Length: 115
Image (cartoon, rainbow, N blue to C red; front, side):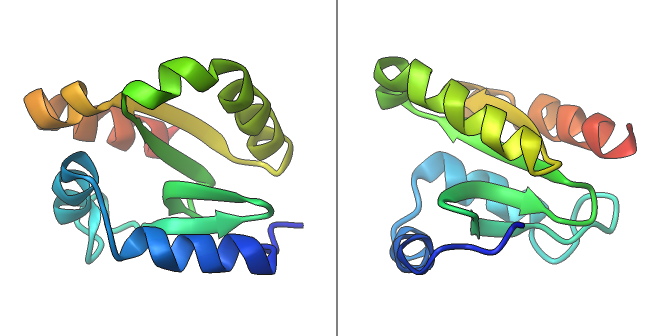
């Protein structure tokens, strides 16, 4: 059910090699089980989608939205719905939230993992 497509795997590998500043910042906090001993993967393919960050144990996807996401709200809603059908909860944060208030973002992710 969560098996990624071949195209998604290729796109994910490419995305891992060129993270945004916000993605780098959050990854430094999540990597190596840095949050509640949960393993997170970055640019994780799930079906046809690529999650910025995903904890398969917590069934949680964390997305960091830059300005371009304002133009794709409908597509993002479709994607979130599909991920939800696959059993994932989706949290979205803006680049500004991650860079300006990283501890608040981390606390929100921790709360979601505890639910």
